[in-house]
Each structure stands twice: as C-alpha cells, then as structure tokens.
Image 1 (cartoon, rainbow, N blue to C red):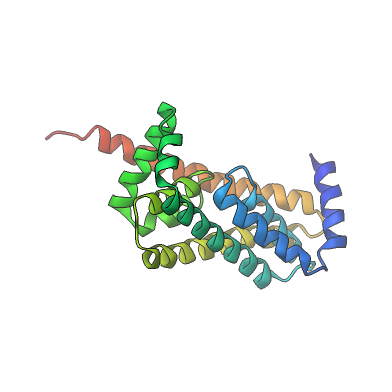
Image 2 (image 1 turned 90 degrees about the vertical axis):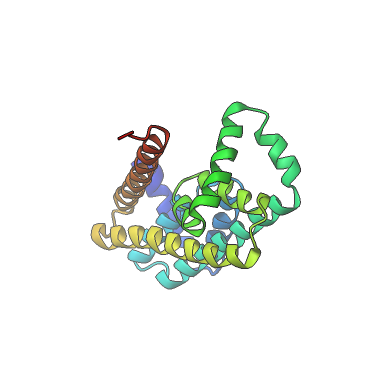
Length: 208
C-alpha cells in the first residue's frame, strides 16, 4: 500500500504543476455526485496533502472540489426532475433500493436542506438525496442554495484534512494521506452511527 501511494505521489509531484490537475479534481467531484463509485473524497484529500507539501495551491483545490461537487449535485437533481418515473422504477426493483428511496423522500420532507449537508459526507447518500430532491420536485433555487453550502463545507473539510496531514508529515505523503483518510472515514462512521441511533429511537419510541 505504501509503495503504491509513494509511486502515485511521485507522479503527482510531476503533474501537479499543470493547471489540468485542478480540472481533474473538479471532474472527479462532479462525477461522484452522479456515480457514487467515483472516489472524490479520496482525490480531494490527496490534493490537500499535495497542497500541504507545496505542490498545489490550497484555495484552488477547495474551489475546484466545491465547484465540481456543486455542479454534480445540480446534475443529479436535474436527472431526478427529468427522469423521476424511470428512477423510481429502478430503485423499486429491489427491496433495498425501495427502502432507500422511501427513506430519502421522508428525510427530504422532514429535515430539508440540512440533509443535503449531512448526506454529502456519506458515499452514495449524497446521490440518492440529490436525486430525491429532484424527484420530489423541490424548487431549484432552494436546492442550489443548500447544495452550494454542502459542497463548500465538504471541499474545505476534505482539503484541510489532507493539507494538515501534508504539513504534519512532510515528505511522507503516503502516511499523510492514510492518516487524513482514516480521519475522514471515522467522521463518516460517526455520522452513520448517529443516524442509525436516531432511527432506532424513531422506530421504537418510549411510551411513558
């Protein structure tokens, strides 16, 4: 793992001086909003590590990631608006998909914009929530406001994790990335545990 990461960061050091790298950050963040398997958070953390070691400019990393996330979330929302019937049929083919869709619908109605912020830190969750906002015909003005806030918070958080790791561990880029990625994963796990605990309380209310 360390050898692979070291090789990658050596390539990154040669390539990061090109403005094209910021476009890659933008593109990966955009795609991840629509295709959950794209590792945008990993990419942004890596870019933050490079910024911490002086190879990239941190504000541009944040702007690239936030812009990509915002555009991707809007694309997912528009897909939901234009293909709501087909998307609903797709998710209802399996019990798990149907339950996820029902959960997202209920959450959008109950929690509104704060759900968009929380879901951005949950891989896969961000896609189903942004799609659901489109499927449930939330106004675009309302959606865009919250999507911008969510993308900005997420991009700043992931970039700074990597940046602090790059500053702390210096030339050991692989260790800096692994520590930053571990912290990001821990935050995601905590969010999921809190969400699960709240769901259990809702499903099993205490009768006094």
